[in-house]
Length: 352
Image 1 (cartoon, rainbow, N blue to C red):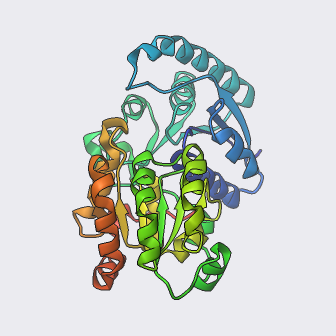
Image 2 (cartoon, rainbow, N blue to C red):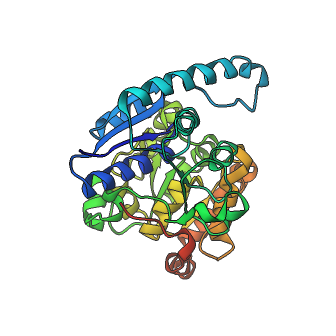
């Protein structure tokens, strides 16, 4: 009989793409394995997972709203309904194990699985564990981590250091620099910056770059700019007169091309971003999202910054300082080479 596995979580690309990488690795190890994803209804996993060739079911669950606590009134009821639906899914699918990768849907399905005595595995991507995973860890079978020192959050005897999973189309990409530059319509002889705010975009990065577009042209520097859907039309309109140097996208599916084209990267500091950048070894300026749970993006970025493997610009000063730091790094080849060479073992990702 083939094994059955549920992979739960999502909400952002930082959870979805590692989950797909895990599924691909499981399928490679056991071709007839049955894999079912469980995500949050209405979130991007409901689109991205089927595109990767896997089935998914959605739970009516949302995350805790930190900016407006009144919006959390219905959260307990949605959580209870989600746990009940999760139990129904588990009893119907009858998995051998459930893997949680983080995100809204991860908690209800793992909680329900643990109450039904189904083995659970937590894939904690960040250097600072979230509250849900801390709760789930008590009854988890295994906890896979991407950073050392996680025993301060989890039982030490359950921890396995695996690094964070990275999609094979990035870790095993055969794309050449020429391929990448041609794909984006770029000049091979000009320096190129890739700016990415995660799958949903980053307001501070976008608003920091827009006033600098003319400067990119004046300095003869090219920009590949992933804005996210919300800022795309604004950025596209602003970049119209700078189209020779600025290429705007709401979302880039071929991230291996974008990384290969880049001489320097500007990025949020989610666990997936850091894992991928450790694989591709690109000089990076991180602008961590300060409102992530427990400010874990700053902790993620500092794991590299403290080893002189990346630079950091705080979100609240990005609009005034990012341009200076970025253009300085583009012009400093020695610093670029230093940042490229350092990739600490304890954030080197598992490649799947």
